[in-house]
Length: 239
Image 1 (cartoon, helix red, strand yellow):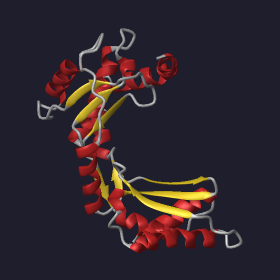
Image 2 (cartoon, rainbow, N blue to C red; image 1 turned 180 degrees about the vertical axis):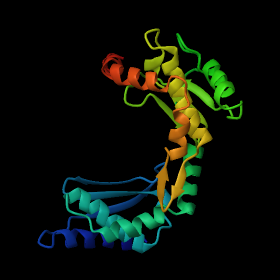
Image 3 (spheres, rainbow, N blue to C red; image 1 turned 120 degrees about the vertical axis):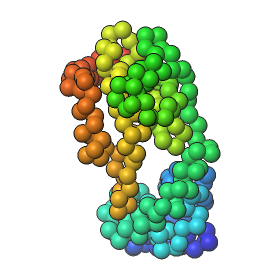
Image 4 (cartoon, one colour; image 1 turned 90 degrees about the vertical axis):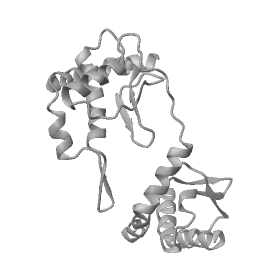
């Protein structure tokens, strides 16, 4: 099987650059947690690592992946057919399920504590659950991030059942309603799970956005975050 896949990468190199000699190519399956693949050149040789989750992928899809990876490596335009045949496989329910099981079994989460120096995430969750969700949201593991961040202030991991809030917000300078808003946003991801349609993922559906605006201090929170993002960035870089 690997010999056949290697031949596909040789074919892709020749297709993109027929005048160039095909370098030695080494293809292996690698136990990435998700659907990840890499291609690198070292000492004139090409090393391809294909995520183990795709070890049963048909050769037609492997061919598409070969043209995608080699095209990116050579900075060439990738033919649309390559993306289509590869995407059709990895977006299948079976592959998504296998990738999710891998993440659940082998993924590692950094868990600190829900009790911050200023804010208690458990208390905030319980209050929001009562006020906005009639106590119907099952409680996930709540944790402050290990480091301060500014690009991502909150994250819901459905696979492991975690909500992580940026430690940048655990400060007396951050209004209580802003922390509530970020937690509320992540709780909405539980109330409105990711939808898959025609091979695409939709995390923020119209229903999600509609409910998000029900938060009492929605506009104030958005404005505060927009006005203070540079300050959060400076604090994160000092951390």
